[in-house]
Amino acid sequence: MNTIHIHAQPFDFSFDIAHTALIIIDMQRDFVEPGGFGASLGNDVSLLQAIVPTVQRVLHAWRKVGGFVVHTREAHKADLSDCPPAKLNRGAPMLRIGDVGPMGRVLIRGEPGHAIISELTPIEGEVVIDKPGKGAFYATALREYLEAMAITHIILMGVTTEVCVQTTMREANDRGYDCLLIEDGTESYFPEFKAAALAMIRAQGAIVGWTAPSASLLSALPLSQPVTN
Ligand code: C5J
Image (cartoon, rainbow, N blue to C red; front, side, top):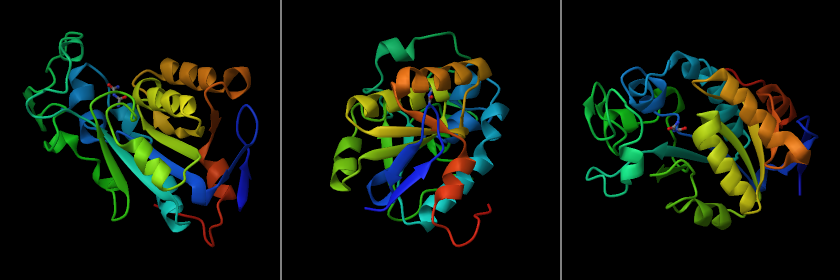
C-alpha cells in the first residue's frame, strides 16, 4: 500500500494510485464546442473550454504514474430507444436530441459531436463508457470495470459539475467509493451552480466526497518532472 495524502476540503483525501480511477466525465464536442447539445440548450460553451488545459495536465500526470483512466460520453443510440420521452421532450432546445446539427445528430453515438475533444483523446488501455443517462453507473458496465481493477477511490473531472459529474459522484458514493472532485477540472455553464455543487459535495463532513484544486493532486503525485501540456 502506497498511500498518498492530499490537501482537500473538508479534510485531507488519502488514496493509493493502484486502487484509484481517474474518471473524466463527458468532455465531448457536444458539450464543449459550439453547435452541439450544450449550445443547443442556449449555453455559452466557452466557460467549459477554459478547463481543457487543466484536465489535460491532470490526465497526462495520471498516465505518467500509471493510473487507471475512464472516460465517459453521454449519448444515445441512433434509434433513440435508450432515450426516454422525458429526456427527449424536456425544455425548448434549438435542436432536440437526434436532430441534425453542425456536428451531426445531436447527442447520438458515433456522430462527430459524440467524440471526446481531441486534446483528451483516450489512449490504448483506457476505458470509454457510453452512457445514456447523467450518471455513469446507470445502464453501463462501469461498476464491473472498477471491480475488475480493485478500485476503491475515484478522482473526477469533466462537465458539467452539477449534472453528470455530480450525479456520477453521488452514484459512486452510494456504492462505497471515496471520491475526490478536482475543482478546476470541472465546469458548469452556470458558475453559481458549480459553486453550489462543490459546497454540497463536501458539506457535512464530505457527505458526497472531497474537493481539491488540481495543484494539490499534481504536487502529491510521484512525478519526476512537472507535467506540462
Ligand atoms: C448535461 C452533462 N449537462 N454531461 N450533461 O446535460 O452534464
